[in-house]
Image (tube, rainbow, N blue to C red):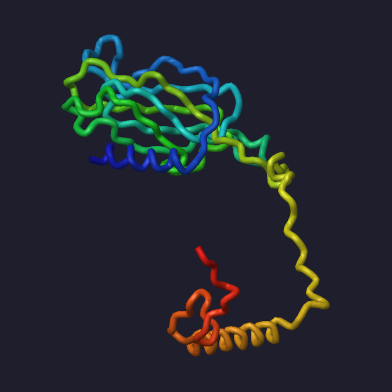
Length: 229
């Protein structure tokens, strides 16, 4: 349920914010976190860490991937503080225990595609130089787990306010108010129109309903208007 809800929220975020292109990055091999001797201990590790190195600092809009039996995902980013090139980069947690499987012991969501959007993150992922994915699978049912087909998309750069698109430059500015000097007073014109309307109503109400013959003049016919066949 939580996974479906977050996916629906992600679809909304995707439609409301534009993303840029997929960025160049290097996805390193997963490293297992395991207590005890890794060689002699036969217990399967339940945590893997995957580091992603970005070629240049990026403001992240979206992280997409395909799941492979990972139950929970935590995302941390290494970013430079804005406006301070001399200060060392710091790690920040963007997403904590993001649920990828409805239950760690069942197949639900085990091989689905997921996207995590900027608006879902706990901190703004700007000036990011490294992304760390922490994968957890508490169930011992699955021999291996991982995430695949990882893609990171940058935040689309909005046009600066001073850069006016070419199609906007062709729009004519708003016209100046018309000069009404020399024109009749609107109130007097309105009063005259109302007076004419009243006269028209009076004339229509006084018209007779008696029919008028085609050549009838005061009850008589003009012989010159008649034709003989």
